[in-house]
Length: 212
Length: 248
Image (cartoon, rainbow over the protein chains, first blue to last red):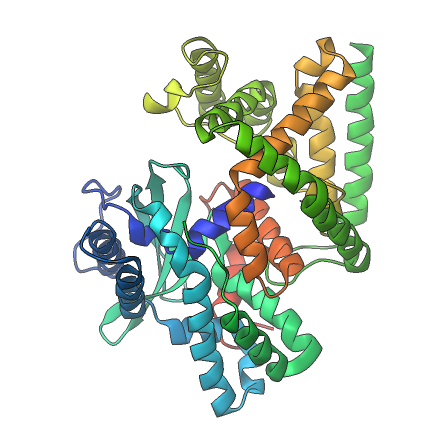
């Protein structure tokens, strides 16, 4: 169980963001094919964040905000947030939906953004990709070096406006979307959309005190 | 020897019984199979208390005494002595290549790696395979059954419990060591591992909206993934996951 927790934490810490892209990605995927495009997006995200982490000029706060910008650019957080709520999305009014999306983003940033500094010595290799039946593409990566060497991270991407956006991250098979969906479902089940919004707000007001 | 056979037979009987009971309860990560939630939550609360007052503090003390490299070496040592379990399950899952790799790792790490404290085999391209009997049962088509929280050991399932019992029969050292040695090994492993992940566990506990649900979901997905070995497609559950209407 503890291994699982450790594993999930890496996923949620946007670790990929912290690694080096290997030139030797496995498999032969044509450049410009859906899988090739999706891989490019993942590799670009990884190298951008790597650049930020390895830049000695930046302060901790500058790094966090730079990485947040990169993540927002390559992730479709709105769609991800909607997948997390699934059919409960319809129980939220338009205002509640907007509030939820921005609170959830803040929540992710507060709780997981601060941990990235631990991962700057890691590398991430793209090891393969797969086209899913619903038009998504999964890009598979593995962590190289550091205490989480060998951890498997899968990115799920969806086409949007001519490019590909990440809509889920799986670490060791544990999907973020699925995990948050179960947690949020529980909260909404007991107190409706209001309780979820309230709980997110409380968490955001007292962010986890983790940074080393 | 007789003891070993008897325990294997008990395991076989238990597997048969559990397969019958669970046969009709397919599980997917998206629909938590947790009919024992009330009981599970009470054990979960006990575990959280034990972690807060006993396991966590002991692990912190452990962490204070031993530097991380020592803890990591111990972690590798425990991994190495579990070789017989992995070998048996590689074979039961008809994975001869994995069996060969695990054997090679054990031989190299036990000798060159100084009794398993180091992992030179990995640098030579030999990756380990974390197979256990719970996964073997999964590969054979036995469903995991309802989510189950065990005291101290945490998240589990009936299939996983049966697997643990069977695996303990395949572990070699308990046959020639006293009971307290196995107990000490298990305890040390737990504390050592707990200390390695202390920061992450604390942060995750603070972040989760419902830590019980977080654990349940993470455990269920993780075990499913282990059984599948990440290779096969994710069947129908993933289609349900990426739909705005939940697929229900």
